[in-house]
Length: 426
Image 1 (spheres, rainbow, N blue to C red):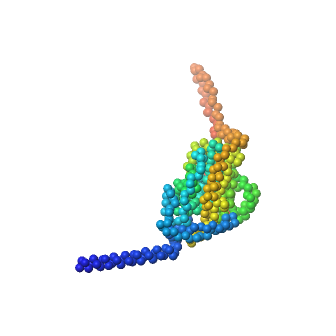
Image 2: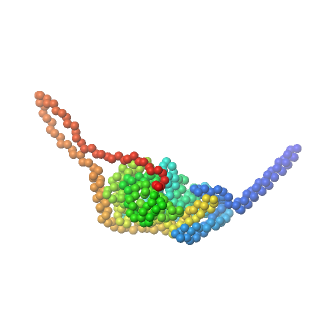
Image 3: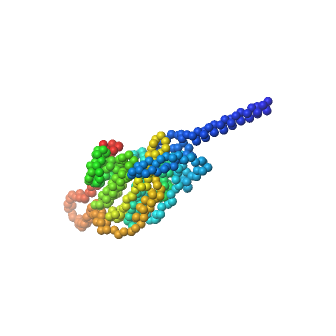
């Protein structure tokens, strides 16, 4: 009887093994024939880790041509991960993960900061469509600003291939630093993250800016005429934020234009004397790892950078990217980088600040303006001359003790900030 039961168990086990093999065979066949799996616009996935797409770039006017999606099947044995010492991917990638870039040839003297603009107000964490990498050479008093499209499709270490503007909301500043190191060969040491309201308040705090608009924009921001336009915070925010389709390059041009104007206005007329007050006002809003003492120590450098042609402006433009549609139902479009061309732009920006050039007399003017503004904030209180002690008399004379008359310093408190409704002005 025991032998009969054992025989039945062996028979059942054999049937189960046959069924399992059949099921696995049908699943593998299904994986080879179908490309299943849902995709989202924010975090794209593919149905199989071994399934990738190799883009075939096609030329288009202004870089707007779409690269064709050519599926390429590779077996797991032939798949060699390229993330090196970085965290491996946790999700399937829609395209082959590129190899990490070698470190850029950059001097230890150069400071690397990243300036981020979020599309969401705090306390929420949103994408950072505005991304600018700043290289600063303090000894030569030169800097280069490189603007990078937020829709650039890169490998985010520890996650997958995704837009660059999702690196910060996915894992914070350290994930963004790893993303820069992996894809561009450079790791920012400092960061500044501003929200839409922060930018709007800043422009209002410096009493608006005058912007040269090169062509009319009748259908955005309530209509903007061509020519010199005075912009308050709300209009400047809309001008810097709107995008026509996938024309990220035009938006980066406008953002660089406003960065120039704001920095120029800060450096003139001794306005940097208000840096401690502005830092206190924005401390609870703007995120940064720059301390106030460090910023104050960089004020002389900022005045020298305000000299003529001390800051160069670069961007990852149409010559370095191609438009590509992510496979799947979302039909999302992203920018694929030409890694060699992108690296050349970064290296050009770095090489430009390694050439020393003499300063002009304009720096002395800016220093004199700042000194005068600082001295105007100091109220000199005269030291009273002590009067001799009177000799006592037999008949005391009652005198009134005069109340001291001092000079009070009226410190203007910062106004209560109110945001305009979220979104762009009508």
